[in-house]
Image 1 (cartoon, one colour):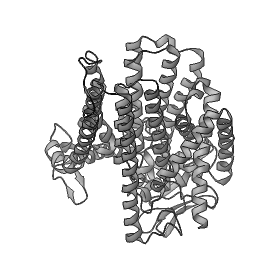
Image 2 (tube, helix red, strand yellow):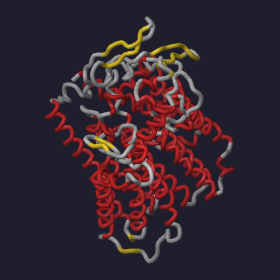
Image 3 (cartoon, rainbow, N blue to C red):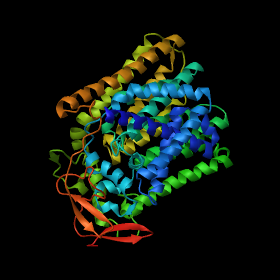
Image 4 (tube, helix red, strand yellow):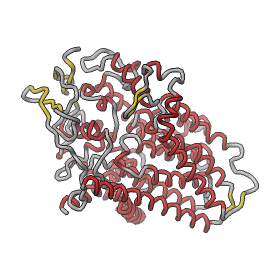
Length: 567
């Protein structure tokens, strides 16, 4: 029971602290952001903490002292948030209700396969050590930057230790639901029942059903959830008319969402192309770059620079595993041949070249070229990973459409008769890029497949003649269905974990950690590097390395540098 109280108390402390940093960021950077509700403040705070964490690691280990100070200021910011107005106090009540409803999703016994390999170890290394240059030699996982690892590292606190290093995606789900529900309610209240209304509803249903299992999110699915919000704001800014102040504010939110998603998975930086598309279409470039937006642009640039520097100091590449971005030949640099081999490997894996129990006979370099991979990808990946998701999305769209259709009749003309084609342009371009280069569901496939179908369904629903009462009733039913399915699927999952793993959540709500034995592969009396004798690093003493040959360590710019002695 004690561990249960600790677990729940820290969940609320961390989520309130995250909202508090959203409040602080908004106050300091652009006070217009204070107009946004508690869900948005949570996402802004998530971005802020991730940025602070990725910067502070160059100076401090994210130990108990560092993290206690950080969350103290977060809670101060949270106090300022709900003291600002009675409206914010009401928002807090709704948020707490939402957390309690979704709380079952936070209980996890078994995490995904990459969690013990490097997700847990990466975050724990940041908590126990100041930034170490050259950690890319420890494992492949240490070569790719993700803000989720940095966010989780500041959740290392007394009593709870590392047992909430999986909770970031849960917070993203909570903030996403609050944002979507509030946007739907505001549109309903202001009689703006349009394409965007239905797009939001479909997005909410899809996320709560498809992404119910928090332990499987990794660094990928949270970014995909944000991608739905990114396209919502893109469509809103591009195709709807409203005043310049609100457009500027929405562009700021769009930028925060893109940079937050990109910090989780670097591939999402490509969505920055949506910003110049807005400036060109709306002709507002000069109107956006006013003085009060300059500071936030600097913050975004700083975040990008930190991401690039972290990649560089881990691997010698600005964007691993893009070989052309590997500059110089530093002691900690991953050899060019290995970078090129891993680039091919990732593409080979995404195109179904290999997996559990199978491997293509074609050499990886030949397999990924000239669509050689397509037939095998269809057989191995499309059936049944892509097809199951596709059929699920189609079912959601058909079910939602007929639920509204039975209460209405078609309008005589479509509001978006001329513009609807532009809704498809960027989603289809990104979908093609995904298919041609990295067609694995984890690299954006879930949402990129859903977008064209959501756009089509929303455009048809927008043509229906519906009374507000019917819209309200059907919307509430679907929101409740999506939440019910989230709860039901998680309860089924928990029941399996309880029976199969003997997971007694009432005694201990913590996820499973395998106790392993590590050997010391480097020791200079001041600094040690460990390596697991069997299996994965899990939560063993850090830094933990899978490379246990002759490792050397020296100092550079006040930081420790690890490198292979055979270079």
